Amino acid sequence: MDQHKLRTLVFEKTGVRIDVDDPVFALVALNEAVLEDAVERHIAAIDAASQALAQQVRQAGGLSGATDGHPARPALDASNETPAPAEHPPGYVPTPPAGPVRPIATQAPRFNPREIRLLLAAAGISLLSALIVLGGQAAFRRPAPAAAPVIAPAALTPEQTLALQNAAKLEKAIQKLDPKARAQLQAELQK
Image 1 (cartoon, one colour):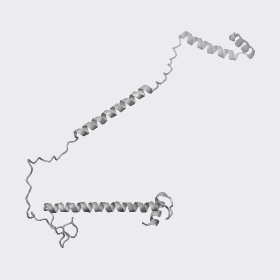
Image 2 (image 1 turned 60 degrees about the vertical axis):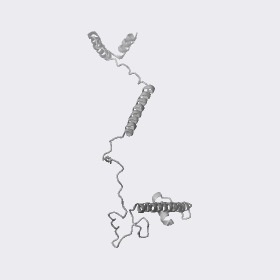
Image 3 (image 1 turned 135 degrees about the horizontal axis):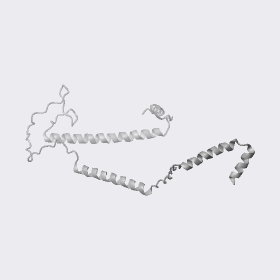
Image 4 (image 1 turned 90 degrees about the vertical axis):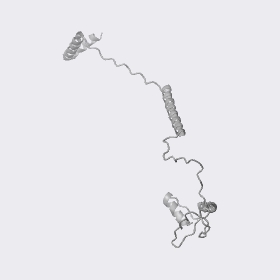
């Protein structure tokens, strides 16, 4: 474990500077030790399983006893290629079929019954969830305030139109009067 290389890597990735005496390196060493122990146990288990498999193959007549020092590997010839197996080893007796041979299915069904049930259950749950959400919205939603009615002005009658025109003419005439007469006229109109 190169601590300086690890320090540089940590600084490049995170921008955090750590010292070689930092306790994090103790954790790194502990991690390496635990990993090494686990790898050794797995290698031992794999070797034991491969030796047991090779022994079973030998007992079944599939491998010869000569190997290159490893029980699971067949011996190699000068060309470093695995030798071709013999047509039938001595004592080979073919096993008769146990009964009528069924054809192997070449295509799987699109959905098996369990998947169909799960799809139907998911569709039902999603439909129920949508109904619950819509029901909740309908129950807790406040109705929008009613808009004020818009009343269209009614059309003026001919008399009203004539009165408005006369009022406009009277207003123009009042503006042409002298200020004293205009004040007296407006005072009279206020009564």
